[in-house]
Length: 116
Length: 113
Image (cartoon, each protein chain N blue to C red):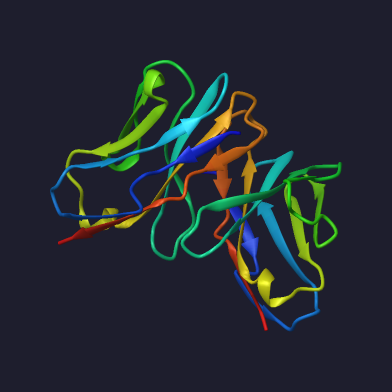
């Protein structure tokens, strides 16, 4: 079945540094990928829709200059948290929609970011 | 605004008990509905989905859900739960164009052996 890989699965960084998280569709192509953030005991919050070859579409309240998204190929989207602060500590999850038309999302395992 | 609500935040059942988790959505137009499961330490997995047709949808591991349009509901059911069903369950909805998926807050199911 379809597999989405996220890397790293766990990252700890100092405040003020930037962190890049990768999301790869391993056995299918994905024009569209989605980035979510999950707070403890809360649901997934959609941050942005990543579109291959074009700018990401950000949800209201999400700072696009802070959360940089790049979707340079049909199998890779990256989320860069710039100048991270402790409040950015969270669980970031990506999902990808298979171009073949299955019309379901496949989720990555998530990346836990801890900013000290 | 589009929204998905799950009324049960934490459910505790004994093995072999029947399960029903509530999900209501607020969407205009055509809606696609999903149930995802997240087992401890694992990522989200699709349990079942409804796009059109038979409103009673059967998914993996004996789960099913019924789409009731008049009630804007898509409740998840299982006749007899097992300890291995302990997980968090998320209801989700998307518009017909499937550009964005909105998730409910999730229901933690704990099955006691």
